[in-house]
Length: 84
Image 1 (tube, helix red, strand yellow):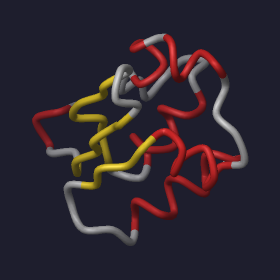
Image 2: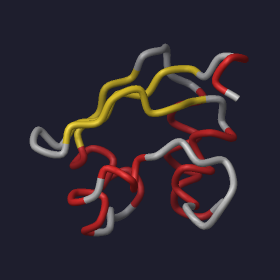
Image 3: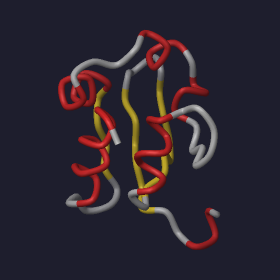
């Protein structure tokens, strides 16, 4: 699953919810693109499509619950059956 697989593995072993800074994720995956810090859509919970980062956390059973571009922080929560 590439570099975002490391984020998925981290989330698989975490208790929900998980709050992380962009810097923490940057360090974990070996670098976030500039678009992650500028565009909320980068954090969309997209299971299909070209956003491999979203596929990683969605397939691991997680979703982005909240993201703050100004605070550079994201909150992940375990996905429920109603999130599909």
